[in-house]
Length: 518
Image 1 (cartoon, rainbow, N blue to C red):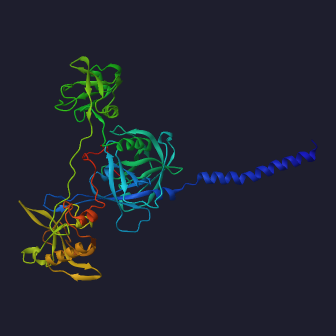
Image 2: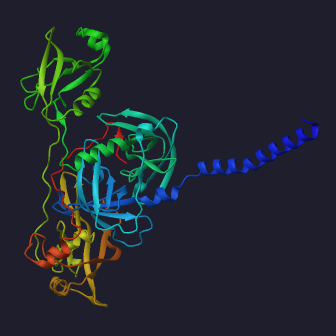
Image 3: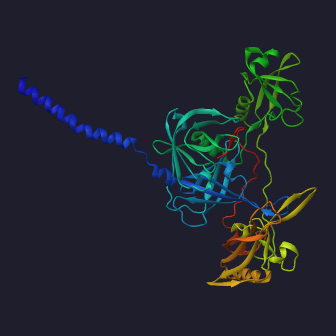
C-alpha cells in the first residue's frame, strides 16, 4: 500500500470515528436522562378521614390523614399504598397529578395487610391516568440511583426527591427485608413509589429513621416491589394471614456473652422467655427462663431473626424449638396459630334530620354560650353529610385552677347562613337550617352552609373572650342516615364512595421502635 493510500485510509477511519462521536454522546445523554414526568404522572396523593369518635370531653372528633400511592392497573383502577395510610380510614380520596377539584376520586379498600404494610385500593374511576411500570427489586444494588415521589407533610403533592440505595436487606423489627435509601422521605410520602433510574417502581416508601423530635435523619425504608407483588397476590385470595408462635412480648434477646452463662452451644446469642405464656400456641410448651437457641435447626441470634423466620411460615405449620430448661437441653414443637388479629370496624352513625350533625340554640344560655344567636354545631356523626364535607363540631377543654378542674369552651362553630339554588339565606334557628336541608334532600341537590369559627386568642386562658376567627362555606349533599338502606336515594347518593373494608382491620403497625411512619 503506497503512502497516499495509507493517508486516505486513515482519514476515512478518522472520519468514521468523528461521525460516530455525536451518536455516542447522544446515546449517553439519552441514557443519562431521567423521565421524572412519568414518575410524577403515575403517582397519586391520598387523603383519608377517620371515623368520628367521642373524646374525653364528650366532643365528636375526626382526623385527616395524608399519604401517597401509585396506579398499577387501569382496568380496575387499582392503586397500591401502605396499610398504615388507610388503616383508620372511613373515607378515602385519591388525587392524581394536576387534580384541580377540591374533592378527590373516591376509593375503596380491596384488601390490606399490616405485616408488610401493603394495601390495595380501587378507584371509582381512573380514565386517562397512566399506569406505573413495575421493576425487579432483586436486581437492585447499593449505590443505584433512586427517586421517591409523594406528598410530603401532606402539603406538597407531586414532590420528587433523588438519592441512592444504601442497603438492600435492612431488617427492622419485622420479617420484611426493606430497601434503605437516602432519598428524602417525610410524613405524607408513605405509600408512594420508589423508582429506579429508568422509572420503574422498585419499592413502596414506608418508614423513616428519625430523632425523638421526629426530624428526618436521611434514612428511609421501602418495601421491595417483589415482596409487594407476592403480598398482593395473597391479598387477592383473601384476608391477610401468617403464622404465629405466641412469642411476642414474652421473650428477650440474650447477647453471646449472656448466652454463654446459660451454656448455649455454638457461642451464639439466644432468646430467653421472660413471661409465662398463658394463651396461644406457646401455652403449655414454654416456661419462664427457657432459653431458645435454635428454630428449625437454625441458630437464633435475636428476636428480630425469630420474628422473620416464624413470620415466613403459615398457619398450621409446625416449628421445632431447641431450648435449655434448667440446664437440660430439649426440643419442643409448636403448631403455629394465626398471626393476624382483627378489630371491629365502626359502623356509620344513626342520626336525625338530613345533615348528619346536631345543632343547638344557645341564645338563652348563661355565660359564653349566650352570645351565640345562630345554631351551634355540637355533634358531627360518622359518615353523615357533615362528616363527608369535613365539617367539625364545637370543642371543649379544661383548665386547672388551683385544686379545681374548670371546663370551658375552646371553640364554637355556628351556622349563620345557607346558599341554595343561587340564593343566600340568613338563618337564625335550627328549624330553618333543617328546612333547607330537607328541601335539598328531596330535590337531590347540594347546598352550601356558611359556618363561623369562634375561638380564644389564648386557648389556655378561659377568661379570654371567644372571637370570630374565620368564616367558610362547606358544600354538602343532605341525606338520611346510611343505616336507612331502604331509601333508594340513600343507596344512590350516600352509598357512593363510602369506604367499608371487606374485613376487619387489626390495630397494629409494622413500624419500628426508633422509626416513624412517613
